[in-house]
Image (cartoon, rainbow, N blue to C red; front, top):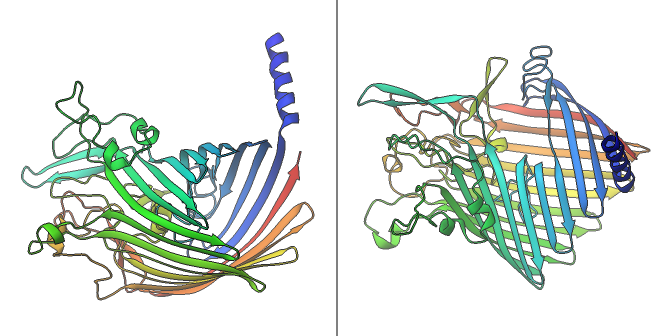
Length: 488
């Protein structure tokens, strides 16, 4: 009884110490881009704060057909699906921040086209640590990509006519930034490591990495390409199993002064050094992304203009005639899944951890935002051009990059997807409620669609890819929403 009384007293003191916000919301929409054209999502959540400490959690019931498994088949594809959009613990104090849970992951730059973490601010199981000391700042994030996957994939050996089935590997990423604030400028180096516990098909090894969390990458504040090789020295007292992890690096500079914000960013997934060491030889493709943007506050609102692009094969895993490393910079190691037995494509923009539109793309966006009293209005206009994308299949239809020809590739197909999209939204408080509406109008020419790679063409890396098709169609989406907010 004493323990129960103590627990109740502690819970009561905690409740009195924390300011708790409760939100209940509903969204109803009609869209040409969701699996169910008409849908409604219901949500509830809490956010408790005490000083710099914050606890939050949320639950959704969704009928848009993206998820399935709860009331399967009750309403359209996927029925009514329960989903946890976020939940966890965050702390922010003087020069120090930390978080743990399923939370939004963010880049250190503020842009819809940020390269190292998508401007969509997707939520994932993660842990983060941030430090600011004087003009120096450091950010470190661990992100669980996929783990305990129930699906399997197969590898076919044409020499022995043997097909082997493997479980999808557990995969994680660690994202770091080291920077300096120099007056109105910030300059930073950015770095990513993607690692898996994948069985080495080429060597036939059953020795997997083990835990999804690699402490070396997260705990050591040095570039991942160096961490990758620590402990692999055969002359050392105790050698680690050598892993072919993926390291991505780059730089950013941004500027904040008065009403202006501007940013430039570059990401290097792989770069061709043979142009210097062997200029007459076969040149491997550069895997590079870039990003420029600026916005300004004016009396007529905040206006922004952003551009980004990425060459073909950027963010992909490596592969050859005998292996697929599955360490691409994506949340998942494949591009499709099933809901209620129906095959579904994973939208590339929801799959890329980094730049939202991924590889083989050019994009330009203009934005505007202004408050009219309590009403907040937001609008954007975006144009994109995309070629084939292969988030999970190295080198698309080919088994090796050399098969596609020498040099860097970008939009090198006769048919490309072109998309123009205008978005607008308004929201405003109404007592304890917040109400809003969003409208998207656009058109897509030669829409990217899943394209199967036959095993006869690629027996190892037969994962489907997205290719421009002969389908063109309007894009229409309208959403109404309301949220009830109360503070306890």
